[in-house]
Amino acid sequence: MWQKVKPDFFNGSIHCSVNRLVNNDNGLIVLRQLFPDGQADQLNFVLFSTSGVHGSYTSIEDEEALPDAENSDEYDADGNEVEVRYGVTFLVVHPREVALRYGVAFPKTPDDFEFLKRLRKSSSEAIQLIGY
Image 1 (cartoon, rainbow, N blue to C red):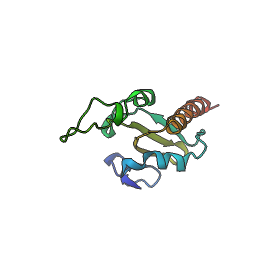
Image 2 (image 1 turned 135 degrees about the vertical axis):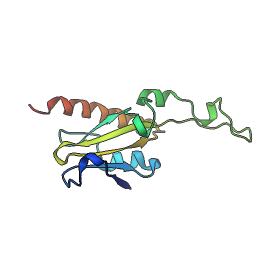
Image 3 (image 1 turned 90 degrees about the vertical axis):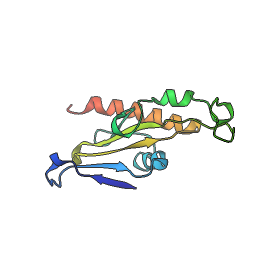
């Protein structure tokens, strides 16, 4: 599911890693695997809407407000309404391991959005406790 990225500045270090999600269709799946209850802690947390080379700045709320295919103003070549989704970029941080994982999640259901909001809130709270 993850592909290791090897930037030059690591100089072959085994003590740090950056991994990108190979298939963004699995974004929610891997976040639920890493955080089954949607709770982050000081050793494993997530930053959302990180954009950069892997997606948009779309927030969880922005993605939630987008219309679904039935209510979309976008059409494909055959005139069918299409669902426009940008996805929510994420960066999973594992400070003790000096490890990063990044990808895009495509929430669709109310439960998906609630999970991401819960994970964002617990991540924010966990980050504030680092060093105390």
